[in-house]
Length: 373
Image (cartoon, rainbow, N blue to C red):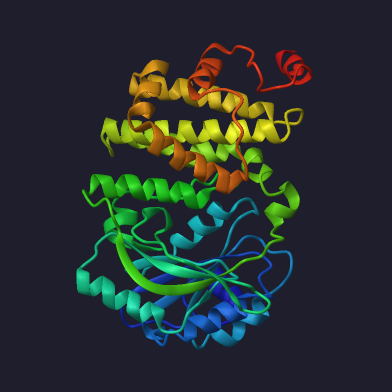
């Protein structure tokens, strides 16, 4: 079957006589330089009769399907195209609609699976009877030399779950990618999965202590090249809030998680937002994105409305384990942003958002004048 026919029909290149165990969903965009290595690494799992590959193309402008053709008679491959080029979540969502496997797995087009690891993943899931999701380790690799830069041990961290049960988790809890997110779509899914696990009384996914795939570390990614290291998060700060705090608050309103859990998550996002925003302002007080001030103010208002809490409550809640809570979140912000020098305390920051008053050191006088006008 030709590629265009596969796209038109949504049918697989090879029809399996049983339900595949894995559906590997690969968002693609101009993927000609990397897709061959990924597909070959899937063949080297030696379980081609127990998995399907779904290529979800985001309206590529550079043809690459000729690189896919040699694999059509070796793997059960489905191909779909998005209606328009927009965002990674939109592309992944299109892929999930074709998935029929028991477990979903998402791979970037420049990842490579380590030989035979999917067999280990399946065996461990079956051994322990996991019903929801599983995590594994991965290697950060130099794409040119294939030198291992670091071993990323995921431990029992739901944030990085890579295998999701299609029936018990994805469909039952109506999990979807948020199509209007330009970034942080993976964090949004992690938030949704975390809420689903809480509802299922299964806080921790199954941790499988093996290295599953190689993540190609490319220091000049499109995002970093365009926005710089720290300003990527600043530029898409609204997406960060949508994929974290708002996701938990919406889950609470939908009856998926208890209020104490939503409160913990929502205030945690506020703490991180405090560190992030202070770092951004310190880095570049003149060009700091003023829209982020409004995003944060709206988020704080929404938190207090949904949870029925005050600024004092938020401060007291955060201060219950002051040193550990602050140090953990400050370190996380420092890793993402690179530095942190506060101009005001968390309590002052909350009052600043609440009262819309001029911060003492947060913005330059010139910038504040521009903002008020």
